[in-house]
Image 1 (cartoon, rainbow, N blue to C red):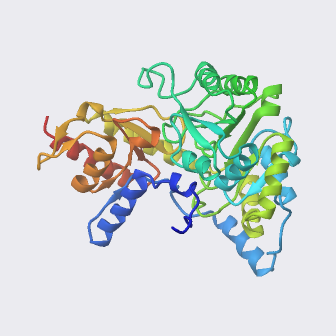
Image 2 (cartoon, rainbow, N blue to C red):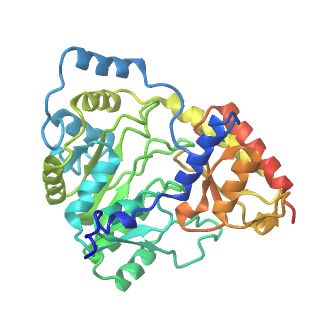
Length: 406
């Protein structure tokens, strides 16, 4: 008799992304001495503020490393309300502190889905959304916009009609998962758009989960849309957020939170308590200091300057289209007009993954392929690197695309 499989079937549904494989290949090139410009990933420029590092160091020296409440430090949960601008909509009891935004999202998914349930996911979804849903036993299903995702002014944004149509096709769907601003497409939903999407979910009894991890990285003077206290928002909307994409050098500071209806948050807290537990007390203290201090506007100015430089460089590349960037630190580049062309060895470059691989092997620049949004013909570049690296990366992309033969 053959032995039973050691690993759960859920594991086999969690596949590494093409971007992860390319990042591994890029590190190999770097180890061989080749200079690779990394425009794929998402660390913010600079080091964590000295005052924040001091908070953590002092907490360690003073031995403030004991357990915290299962839902996180009460003072941090309270501060999150101001950070999210939700003090008039929620209370501290509606906030769960977790070891990063992914842990917060995992805890929420764990208590609203069961094995075999469906979670509808924005077609322009962060590459981790699908594996996170699958790891919990549910099935992720993309919501495909009814109109062409390439239409002018659309840029993959969903409408309430898109959500209602998909919910009618799958009436048992437990949740709709999307990001705002959107990683990877850098688009921003307005408050009216978000409320309309939440109301479409509420009408079908589905929870609307919004990842707003990039909510501070907004440009051109725009602020994150305020969500009014409508019945749908109060009862069916969960916000996921954290510090890793809001502060310099905070990528490894694993503190995130979920804010939503009390029954969901209490249940997620119970699951978290018997699982990995909340973030470390010291990390929570650093996060509390970070979100309670005046925000670093210089970071936004630096990123906006990089964004503008990237767009200017893209405009000089024939047949390349750079999507507008309202937020995040990413830009989608439309390379569809280059599809089907060949490199010097007569290799046809057609898919997004092939474009990403070609740019790495030919130009030594690492980008993310368009399969992260389930669409071919796009690559995603990050402009969070130092300005000279962003400029160098775009120059390499221009040369590599120029070398492709029609």
